[in-house]
Image (cartoon, rainbow, N blue to C red; front, side, top):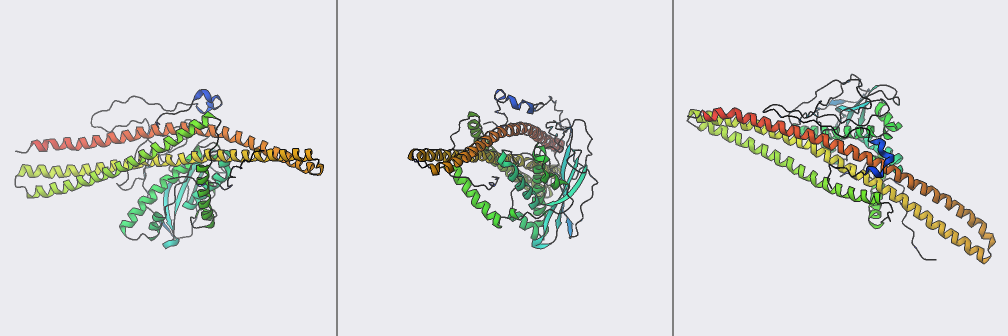
Amino acid sequence: MTDEKLPPMMATDDPVDDEDDDIFSSTIDVSDHDDLSSLRNEELFVSSPTVLPPLTNINLNEESSTLLKSDVPLINDHKEVEQLPSKVISNGFEEEINLKENDTPSVTENNNQGNDMPNVSTNDINFENIENGFIKISISETTKVGEGMSSYVAYRIVTRTNMTMFKTNNMAVLRRFSDFLGLHNKLTEKYLRNGRLIPPAPQKNMLGSTRIKISGNQSDQATSAEFIEKRRLALERFLKRIALHPILRNDKCFCDFLEQDCELPKATSTSALSGAGVMRLFNKVGETVNKITYKMDENEPWFEEKEVQIENLDLQLRNLHGAVESLVINRKELAHSSGSFAKSAAVLSNCEEHTGLSRALSQLADVFEKVESVRTEQANTDFSIFCELLKDYIGLIGAVKNVFHERVKVYQNMQHAQMILTKKREQKTKFELTGRLDKVGSVTNEVSEWEAKLSRCQDEFDQISKTIKVEFEQFEINRIKEFKTVISSYLEEMINHQTLIIKHWQAFIPEAKAIA
């Protein structure tokens, strides 16, 4: 008998989600997945040629996105509540998850306050029709509860649906950030082991949260409001991605999260300084070491191909995300330079004695002030539409890697059971040959137990492999749809901004020609 070392046993604790090839083409091979063909019941993307009129607002989408307007009251909260400014940013993610065609129309509501964030009109992403129902989820506003370091931000979640799993059609609840993390932990504990793709929750930001608690002056409040708005949008996308999943949206924890009009038990395990948080840190280190040291002998080409694709996609998304972040910074610097030029031109116009030239310089300063505003809006659009989408998908790629690694853990358990079973069989044979019949009975029972364990591990491995294929294919379908819709919205905004700049310069041309 050869001396073989057993593969390292995997920790039973769930790993922490990692947050932090051409992305516009799918690598799904239809011929290899006939059993998944039902997932492709609708066309991924439909576009019609649009003739761009000169110097007019251009709309590449057939419909504009809508926000749900609800009269559902807030839950009662006896603590001191401070309304925080709310602004609407659309990044191309669907405002409504349509599960039934031509259902109840939604009411348009524009809550855009302030000019630092754009209100982008985007087309809804039409996902698969499911169970003749619909569900709309939006985080309509945020409130600061309490004062000082004990304060926190509550998010008002408004849900409208006709799905039978909910007790009512219209719901509104207040949830704090730790509640969202608690929901993600519960879904991970239930479904990750089965191979389900769990959308990642937004990352914690201790610096931003502390700044909100101690914000006092106007500058700090403005920074905190921007941080809260970004987090609000990320949390809204998190809930919508769960609602898109055919299994996760039926989970009782998710339903209770949306409809129970009371405070949920505080999710203390989400705290980084808690005992559970420290254990998660150690488990994460162990998972990372195991991923590096243990290499699975893959016998399915599909998984080997997809793992390579995911690694390449992750690298390209991170590179593109960094490039878009640099683009946002450069656009803001360009806007600032335009504003400086406008101020200098205005001062020069006051010093100029020539009337025509002085008036032209004054008009030029006005044009550059308008151009500064447009370029600032464009920088915000780059961030809200494109940069946030890339950040979301970097997190989703991390969730895909977690699912793939969960399959490796199941495979390790199967290999462990196989090795133990082989040793028990060898031990039984040895006892039979040496005539130690008193030991044969107990070893025979152990052999039967490990045979049953091995059978269960094999069934679990086959099931998780099948589930991952279904989950990955739906992930690919949604990814292609969402990227195409977002790119269309992004191009629309780019054209509109450039058109507006051209309008400003065309209005200045007569003034420049009038200089005598």
